Length: 249
Image (cartoon, rainbow, N blue to C red; front, top):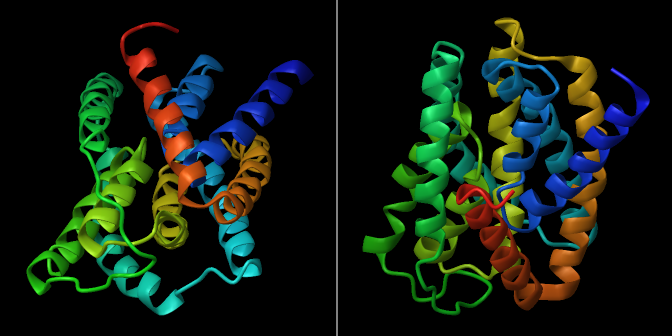
């Protein structure tokens, strides 16, 4: 593999890291890039987890630097997502390439339609939140965690939809909780992939270096630009995903 290919992967990592933290769908860039470089689906899936971890470490640090953090709430949500993520990762290392790629295609299409559901503006925190709505956040975290451990692609959209609709959070806080939750459950998920020989550390670290830059930048921009900027990036991310699904590129 030559220098230009590593440079390409690094650049993909930056763009993907930015998209993942600001909205979601960055793995629709990284997974095809890794597969294009000769990795099978399971190996690409595991290698991509390095990128997810580094981008979210950088994003969490950036959010904390800007005093946007609620660690106890993030931890409560993670405790529900974590068992699902471990179960999903265990399943992911035991499915065939063909089945994984079919499931990936189905999920991508479903995610686009889910995230296009109209949302009403909310305040920074859950104010006047009904207990009926709130109780669904925990099973939602388990289910999304399972999906994140299994496929991961576009899990950011799912977390954003759940936190925004069920907890009525400001989108800046939605993104902060999203990256914190994903960071904490991704560590054991990566361990499972690594123990089963499904991680290419060289490519993963190159991709992850780019992801850290993109993640830090996205968290900074998220706080400075607020909900308006997040909505713009979210719309662009969904539009690009839709074009990709319909074979535009």
